[in-house]
Amino acid sequence: MIDVEEVKRIASLAKLELNAEGLEKISGELSRILDYIDKLRELEAAEPEGHEIAAMEPRDDRVVESVLDADAIAANAPDFRNGFFVVPPVIG
Image 1 (cartoon, rainbow, N blue to C red):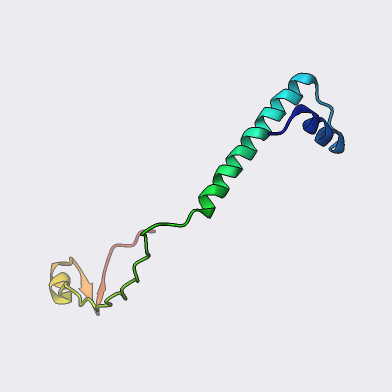
Image 2 (spheres, rainbow, N blue to C red):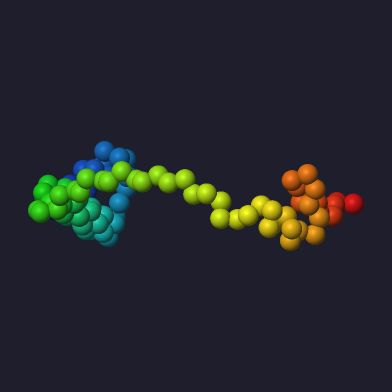
């Protein structure tokens, strides 16, 4: 908990001028922030129970052969020459 006097001291060091309302508000906000940090520290300190990380299995790399038949594709193309699809020019 950060009280108003602590906030006054910090404000003085930071060359800030705060009115009574601002001191109370900042005191409350800083206290909530510190409480949250304490909760986070508790989480970091907690050890996982019974959750061992399973060893990763190596991936089975497989070469996938083409399922498409190039000749069948070319046969269905309107114009196919020398291994390329012939299309009309986009820019005239």
